[in-house]
Amino acid sequence: MVLLSTLLCSNLSLAEFDHDASQNIEELPNATPLKSLSSLQSLKNLSQQKSYEAPFVQQLNNAHKVRTLFVAVQDLPIVDIQLTFNAGSAQDENIAKGLNGLSNMAARLMTEGTDQYTAKQIASIFDGLGAKFSVNAYRDMFTVRMRVLSDPQKLNPAIEMMLHVLNHATFNNSGLNLVLNNTKIGQKQIQENPNRLMNIRFYRAIYGKHPYAEPSVGTNGSIQKITPELLVQFRKQLLVAQNMNIAITGNLSTEQATQLGNLITQNLAQGEKAAELPEPLDQTDFNIQYIPYQSTQAHIMMGHLGIRREDPDRIALEVANQMFGGNGFNSVLMKELRVKRGYTYGAYSTLSSTQARGLFSLSYSTQQDQIMESIRVTHQALIDFVRQPIQRKVLEETKEGMLRSFPMTFSSNANINAQLAAIAFYHLPSNYLSDYQQQLSQITAKQVQTALQKHIRADRLTLVIVANQLDAVALKTMLNANLGIHTALISEKSTAPVSK
Image 1 (cartoon, rainbow, N blue to C red):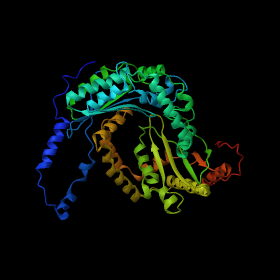
Image 2: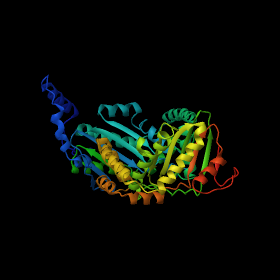
Image 3: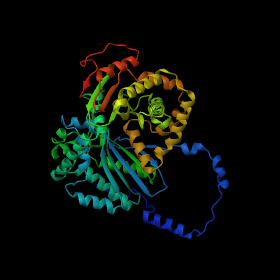
Image 4: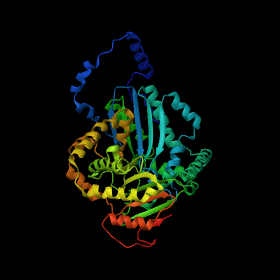
């Protein structure tokens, strides 16, 4: 292992920082007079532009051509590091068919022991260095995160330990069996949670045989096939330098961050990028999925395939989604379903954009006897939203709200680092954060309307309904009537599949 003995210059330690802070507090007078509110009125004159200013992102040179992004933040003597591998659950079956949940299992077992250290020893070493270390798996990403002091006496050994765990995790049987038992309990809990059932069915109905179709945690059947040998194969094939990007944020110089990125890259296994994901297939009609569930509440979700992360219409669609179902009581969905009719406590829409096409979806819960009418109102609201002109006043209010909240996405070192990781992973430009604000402020009603009509299709929705009962035939007829397609009653063997 290459040591970092010459990598970093000395920085103020956290203990010194806390001591200095406490000294300053003690020196304050005991009875500092409070200023009147009137004396604070000058705050109104502060420029809003500064609060919107995105951090300066540097793309560092890397000897192994691994994309490395860095933001220098000198306020605190800490460093945040994230290694992001293209090794989420969407890549599970690249190891072997039917291994859904493999990446999640690898993430959970990564710190359970190596060929030199037990799980307890690993935790003790990180704790002794004051380092926070975590490993997680999602549909697209496999992430390794660490936060540690920038003091070389803390940072250097923490980096060495992080790399050791990545390179030498054994995924032992005892840890695997423990996680398997806990996962079985979690799978049973899913069956008692209508929202989880609804989400799982929704992904399966939308994605079919695509890698996104199965839950990231796997299923009872798939996780039983996972062995330590398969987990080691996963690590050797996918947790390699060429399948990774690096995000660094904190109290380092550009030269120090560059050396750190190179050190991490050269001390990880070398390999190849993961295979590109296939594109999922669009539905051509309504797809009605029914899950019988004994409850007074019915849970409803509907939507269809969305866009890839790099789609040029993404910002316009984000604005549209905020207006339709993402803006609390001001959204179209909340006004139609809760404010006007009292059908639900909350109704929300989401737009996810991923490596392959993501999802546009909306969901809410309502009383059993309000299922049909609430779906009719929701579907009609979506049709009208796509067809009717965007109200300019509402558009400007929505954009202003998004611009004001956007700085929260980089309000801390950890948030900045998460943004850097996403920018690198999804092949976005390094100036994405500053460009996003400019593009958002310039979005027009015409752009939003064009994006809506291009990407949002009220005629090919997948609907998942978790309820006591459902007349799927009547539901299909009603949806067609909303579209102006008046059809006779159809049999349950309709072209719109109904699954129980």
